Image (tube, rainbow, N blue to C red):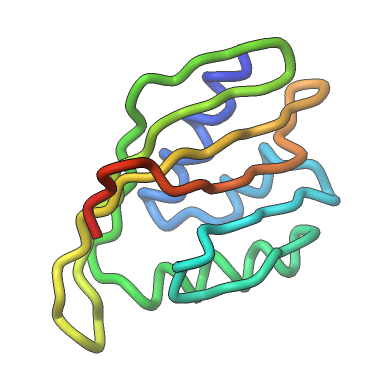
Length: 122
């Protein structure tokens, strides 16, 4: 069930549906992005997460996240993610692979941390 919540959040992101993402996140959701993210810093709560995601979507054209190998263990879901897109300002292609660790409670995501993977494409 928790894997499906994470999939629904990522599918909403891929559609650019920020409200659809937030519906599946607790009000105090905490997003800890990769340190190398073009929009850095921890985002807490729906307002900050909305700003982060909207900035991220504005940074890339055709941004898409593909989930690989989701694993559920209790209230956590760990998944490898491949991000595709093109920088709006630079025109450079994005093909990056990293992991996300999601924490869920009562059917809602309450936190997510991103981590680099060995051999990550950049």
